[in-house]
Length: 282
Image (cartoon, rainbow, N blue to C red; front, side):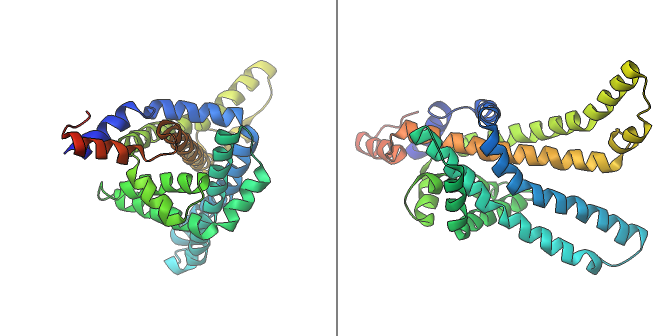
């Protein structure tokens, strides 16, 4: 009972709120736009392009041509492979953020080298995170895998221990509540980004047409709100942005925990103190 109260207290008081983390993630991305967006686009760009191509081919093959699912299986397997290849780039981003936090400077090339050198670890964490997302659609519990894997990736990038050391350390960080609330913030942010991306070109084209008196019908057919292709593209871009902000937010969360604990296992220390005193810190 005491340990449960400790987790609640530390996650509520010692660590930043989910909305604060999301806000900091946005500002961090803007302040370090070059490296963050470079690593983000390298990681999310190819899967996004393949996913849009997969949707288009699925529509033409299954609904227009009347072919079977086997017609799009090669593209589906390619999409799955590219999805997992992106995780070394997320590890590189975590390494960059950890070095920036500790030393005030970081090497993008060094972060990339670290990410691909430890690609198996990155894919391991990415697999657990993906299984957590998929399983969490039916049951709430697997979402914890996503939270733990996201934090373990950050701790591995910041430390010198093994992948399993980082996994065990992530389990002792009382950040489950913050992670679940951050997930809720991202689920609100992604639709908002979609609406902005989906409607902004049409609004801009309308303004240009009104001010300059030019014909924008061709562009409106391509980028207007009536275009299904643009709607799908805007949805994928919004998901890409939310996923990148999730990674940045977890990097900031890991840095906050490191600052709070001073490099020590703060939760273990408080739990031991509770066991000696017989009182829970709530």
